[in-house]
Image (cartoon, rainbow, N blue to C red; front, side, top):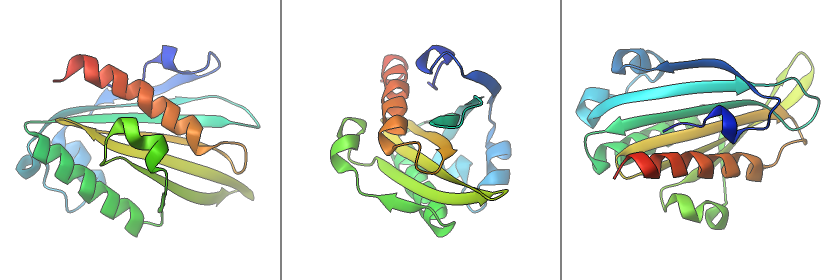
Length: 163
């Protein structure tokens, strides 16, 4: 239900991949009651590469819920938490259309060591699955379309596994 190594350019390598329990996720998402939402399980994987341009970090996450409503509510709560943390919703309805009406694109510009980075998140729901793909790279060298394209690849994996 997450991006596979073959979904990314050949210069990316896996940094971390693991199942995420409700208690592990609760530690990073204060205020969310995953048991009440009906979260069953989830998986997180991160990839990275060394480059001066383009995506350098890609994170892929998916959580399976007992019901569609739990995935929808989790998506809404996550968007609210993310925007309160500084990320801005980017209008991209047409580009996100195949991911459903709940899909959102978010952007955060941050600096580290004097270098600016763009950080895009695509969050959406596919039936009982709440999913996110995040991509980061040097500011001005990545486009939202780069991350949206990866989200569409992840959604294809989800669609094959969950009805």
